[in-house]
Amino acid sequence: MTGASDFSQGAAFVRGEYVPIGQACVPITDWGFLRSDATYDVVTVWEGAFFRLDAHLDRFLASCARFRLDPGRSRDQITAVLERCVSLAGLRRSYVEMIVTRGQPPWGSRDPRQAVNQFYAFAVPYVWIANDEQRQRGLHLRISDVQRIPAASVDPRAKNYHWNDLTMGLLGALGAGADTVVLTDAAGNVVEGPGFNVFAVTGGRLVTPGEGVLEGVTRRTVLEMAQALGIPSEVRALPASEARSAQEVFLSTSGGGVLPVTRIDGQPVANGEVGPFTRQLAKTYWEWHADARYSTPVRYG
Image (cartoon, rainbow, N blue to C red; front, side, top):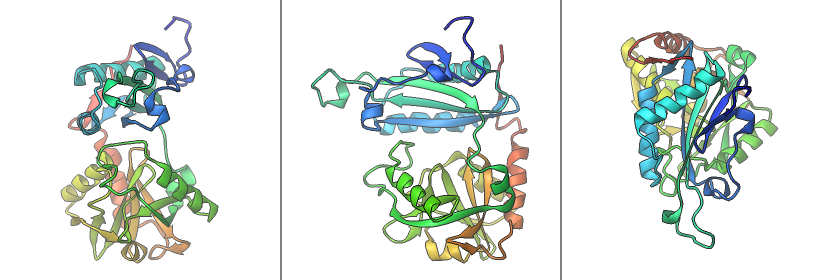
């Protein structure tokens, strides 16, 4: 790192050094690249403070343990790296990612135990997975016939880059004129989409899938908000047919919080307008960012 480095577009931590985001790279021989053999987590910074940093660190370290990866750093050390990336970039609103890759074993070895795991991190300006227009009118969602990788094969509770099923489903949805996609399991239940969990309002209750999904921190926040607001909720299987006939549908993600869905497979959800539960939860989500229980201020400079 040099004093002349330009971090205005973001900053990254790569093999012990802080570099501008445009210079961040992973060796092509790292199994994180060659085999998607890695885990990661994303925490956001809003108005100069991390939101639910402890929850993201908990999940990140649990994912590392699940995939037998070692970040080589303590929680405090990981936090210091993330904070430094944000501070170098001077970002008040940021998307901050931490990653551990398998690394590379000796040439010719197929034994993952012989690889030296690598820790990376970066901070870039806050990422919205829905633009302003989509957030106002509601997203158009397609329920794909592409099945999510079964949990018995890749545990979705450990955050991973096994996204080919999500990518193919998304390509199909975009080709059909939708904004995004949600995949199903072998039983025809809605599970998750690329980077988000799904909620439906049915019979006056919030329902979100309980199996075959990443247990998102924003999903957890929505369930906690619902409890605080007196909104009944259920974590259970959500058949695609029930999602299509719901009174409201929305997505939960660190890339935007609570995002409304107003059309599914080309048909309006209820009256095709953003519903009251969705509006209330979206408002509360951003209010909770100012709550000291969930906020960890970034030390800039």
